[in-house]
Image (cartoon, rainbow, N blue to C red; front, side, top):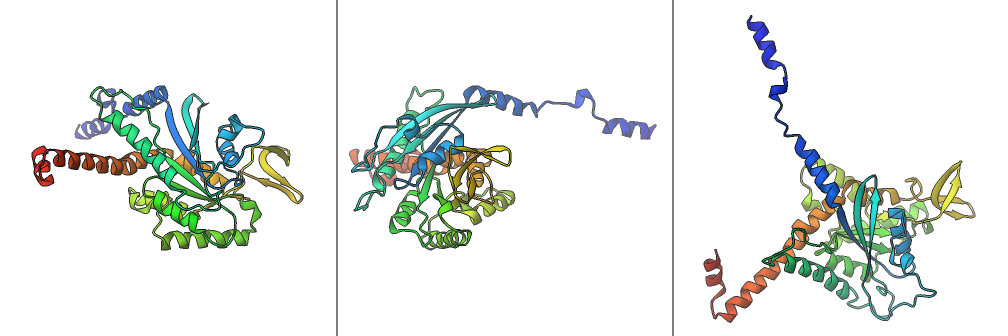
Length: 327
């Protein structure tokens, strides 16, 4: 009798089911209705294949040049910030993708302080979000124009980073997730590529530049293990192409040369697939979370502190008195 009772106690019956796991389906349905947003900035001098790589990543004509191509685009005398948005849908999942281009960066004889307009643009998006957030009658869903990720294109010199590269990434890595890539990596031999990647990692460490995925934001041991593998591959040596070629009976994205076809998505040829997986398939939500909870939060705290200081000065109150009063 006791044995029968014990077996009955271990059995799952319909009366035991609470339904907590149904929250996942509720979240999925809500997310599918709302859709997703991703804002990617591309930075690098002209001719490094920024537009082509973006088209390759999303297998669509998403770059500014693809949509607004002119007969001959002159290099601007100053850095311009231009963005273009697209609605992309795949298997019922909708995403609003915004690609932010920075024509003119690194193309001048004197590139001193050329990072400043880009820094201002990123902070302007944080400010716009903050102003919406502090409105009394704020929108149910605040439009998100914050830059989630900046892909920085390094010229394939094979030697070392330029002072411009170091200065840009040193300053911008504090306000946005930076993913550095070696552009047009097919111009380097495999030995040159490996040497260049190692040299860049050493220079990033020497200059205190923390690119994505940042070690300090690893959430647990599993995260750390996955991200450590990615950090060992940074910067990604990439090749972009929106042209398809026939290779062994299959249609593949690639670049045709006299000695064969470089397959964009073949990890033996380049690291494009790793970059795509990081940005879209494995870390997209994490990139957005770090933008919101780290970079934007730092901006928000700084701005609110500035406002508090301004109010205290206007009222003739010491700052510590105002803080105590507000608390």
